Amino acid sequence: MKKILLLLLVLGGLAMLDPRVREWALQFAGPIGEVGQRRSAERALDDIAAELAKAATETGVYPQPGSLRLWLQGQDLDGTDPWGSAYYLELFADSFVVGSPGPDARVRSDDDLRLAQRRVQPKPGVLINDDLQPAPPPSSAARTGKSKAMEAARRR
Image 1: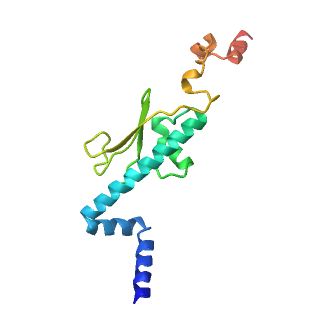
Image 2: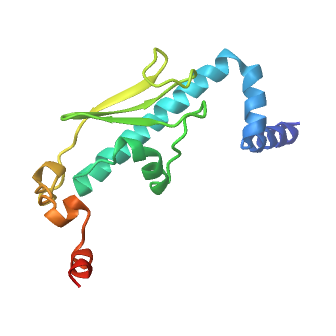
Image 3: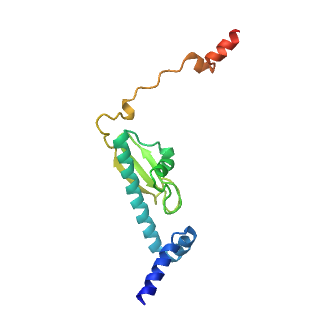
């Protein structure tokens, strides 16, 4: 009897790997499923914040908010919350926020899950964005859209 229960448990677990089966099962789980989804999103936000802090310590740079999903893929993290929406990132001078739009899939609504963290200090010797020199102003040729090659061709 124990072997049959164990087999059913394993098969059920494997079936939950399929998003269609998981969605169907969560419809019947109701509020229990919602609590599990919130906990899953909260754990993912913790993982994302930890990876962001680790990367910023190593490089002195945070990914741009619009490229968070791509950055997460490079870190082997899922960029999608349990409700199918992309996690988001907000950067501030002294902190950052990672968030999930929550069940309604709308950013900055009442059901969002958000995790705020202080920005970390990079390792000694690592330049941060503020330490970088601004790019030199564009040359007059770049401002007018004319390259040196175009100027030379015009003179011929």
